[in-house]
Image 1: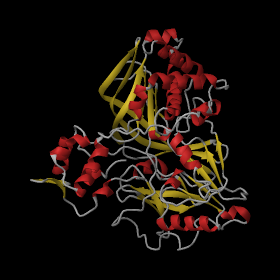
Image 2: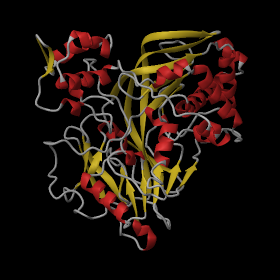
Image 3: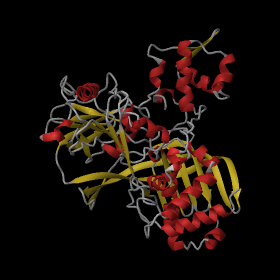
Image 4: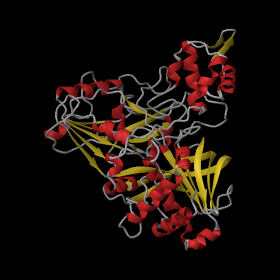
Length: 536
């Protein structure tokens, strides 16, 4: 979670990037009982970043909040769904007309209509993203289909628990995807059924988390120096910054909240913060929904194909200044996927462990990301039909990362030649990101990665995995402290896959905008084996 930009520490950087709401996935199948179908779909890229460099973006959680009041932009009169109407339902005959979609960014009236229809039996099923966990009351479902491991055991059992809440029998089915973690769990079911729910990972001293927390606390009762021990050693300096921004005022009785607005509204539990981008139908001015601000560059850029309740739209214009994306209904025979470039600079190394000649490190980094183009892919086959350039500003994220380096001698021992070095690093990075949710309470969309054959800060082949939230969320730190087990599981997952040269079950990534190239499966196994040989 993070505050509105107005209370962020004065770092001089733009809020970090995140993935916005997943597209709704209308199911067109005959279903004879109430089914909650949960999906975890995102559109992010892993793009080539210069010679021998590859990056997999980190992400946040999609927002389903309504647009802020007083937002400027197009005339939005007449927006939203009619009261009582079920969005997306009734356009097709038979049972398929009783299946609807749900994702973050729907308007409040749409969410309420879906909730009523599901409870009344008008709808038999709902195809939803994990946004269904917030803002809608689900009970009385008979069955849940979970398409892909949701990232944590906590989320898995929470989603499974949508069915059978009234005490009746229930059915829950997990359908594994072609991803490293799903493959690992299919072969190691004890990781789900014989392992307790994860310990929650949180960095309470992250200023992006602590700043709004202090404001909310001061709004309840003035903060005093006696409270500093409750909030950590950074409290004093952060309170001074909040004073400078005129969010808090110091008086004899302590620090007081100074504004009329609710301090609790500085934190958005549904998204990564920032002003949502309104998705507006250009010809009518009707508001279709919103997209998380951090996701706008990748999901509603000019030319992007946008899905809403089973209808397809193409983005005509993205106005970042007014936070609005103008769309028109269309049915192009393609989907779109944004491509970006990512660079990473090491700001501070906070911890370092020697693994023989290799080094395992944890610290602060600055990630610069810019969406530069998008691909048009043919429906069904995924064939690339063309690429269009985009002119969007770069976004900068200061966060925490774990990274490891290897030396030339280690590369020789692992039989990694210059021709396969980039592919070996890239494959290890993909698989490590896919496996990390087994050790930290995160989803692969919450973390990002960069691999480079010669990083300018380390002067060695380096693989980075970083938190996708400003200031860090604790995922990379957990990875650092469990690195031996994490990277061992990563190597084992790659080696156990029966494919010849790499597939989505081991080293290919759904976020890779570089067409998962180059990747070298056997090189990644040998590289990780050599890295772990001297691990403490």
